[in-house]
Length: 285
Image 1 (tube, helix red, strand yellow):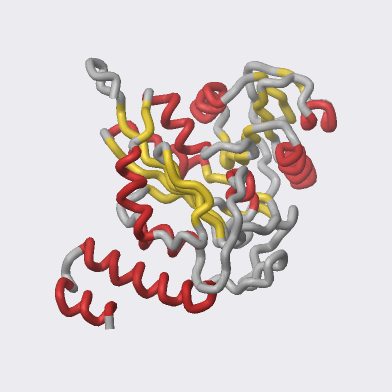
Image 2 (cartoon, one colour):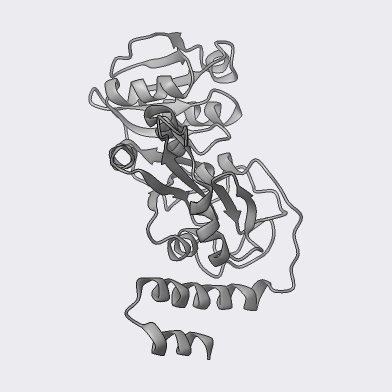
């Protein structure tokens, strides 16, 4: 009845269409999950990039392309091992020269990256930005607990959180999936309150919780935030996801032109939305 009423009242309105989409998805979601209550969990950013879209095609890079691994810890080592097995050149970026990946794979320290080889580059997200412009990379593997795309834009364009952007989206997200909302960011997962498997292939029924997803997180977030710029985490292997550099570059070009925007990175199971705005040199906002 509610959905039919929305269609009758304003079927040509974009906002009404979002209400219709959300009402349908929330109805499906609550019909399956309305009895469940979950405790709050944190640190799901790495999981977002690990549990990703259907397996992307990736082969030996040869002399044309290489990849960037942002972070040299446990998940960075996992990514480095995968790329070595594929015969692809890569650079691990971490502020710690003694990080796990640098030790485990005996990576060569370098400031300038060639198209072949395995490198360690000391630095943070600013260094990742530099490599995106110089290394001719094909994929970026985000293995640090942050929304990589949003933080790259924040650093590159001197951005601040836009809290109003998330405030406008939050009412359209079922609270049973929202892990965190505030300070310009919203994190959601269908596996709230449960621990994800390290090498999960994202089946329709979650192997750790036993729940059947009513839709993908990408679909849910697209309905809640239709004007956001969406980046998909492409699955390289079970439990390992990456962003395509061409798509990340498109986002950065988009962010450069916008005064305010919302960016999302999603997969079937998890997602993060970040709202950002440019600083006013006079007001500081």
